[in-house]
Amino acid sequence: MLRRILLLAVLSLSVTALDSRAQSSSTWIGFEAGSPSSITLMFDRGRDANLEFLAAWDLGEWFFVNGHMLFLANESTDPPLSLRYGPGLFAGTRNEQLSLGGSFRLEGAYHWNKYAAYLALTPGLEVIERTEFVMGGGLGFRMRL
Image 1 (cartoon, rainbow, N blue to C red):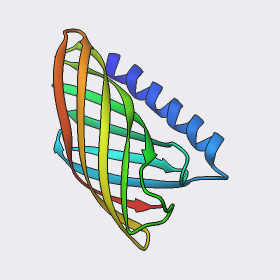
Image 2 (cartoon, helix red, strand yellow; image 1 turned 180 degrees about the vertical axis):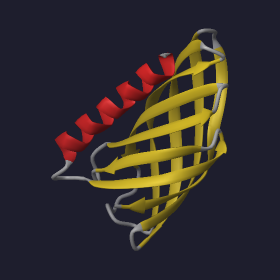
Image 3 (tube, rainbow, N blue to C red; image 1 turned 135 degrees about the vertical axis):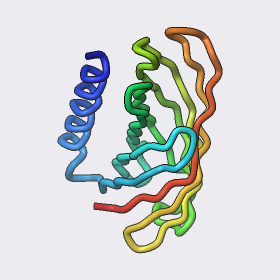
Image 4 (cartoon, rainbow, N blue to C red; image 1 turned 30 degrees about the vertical axis):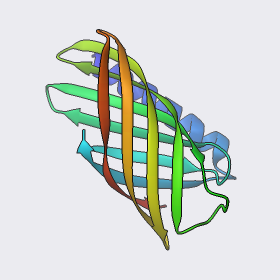
């Protein structure tokens, strides 16, 4: 039940972000192989803060969603290489226990045509159900829709 509530909350936030940014953003969808592996959705707004959502799960064990506000560190808005960074939040369930915390994401990407390959590092601090340092990230691929 808790997983369904979290999934509905993420979908609601995603639809709201899509609706409010549809005219000035491009939407990217992708996959990240790492710790943990996840699917990603990013709303790219050029030099403005981008919104990125990740969802990762292991059936029957855990489910997590992350949301980050990513800022572009490069001078140009359309380089073949980009560096993004920014704060975020995560929520999920592990063995039917709620988990909440904050995170920071650092992401370097190579862009070509409507594709991007990236390497991300996401340290975080879980504050509910227990206080624990967590490390995530991985190698990912995105496609602009």
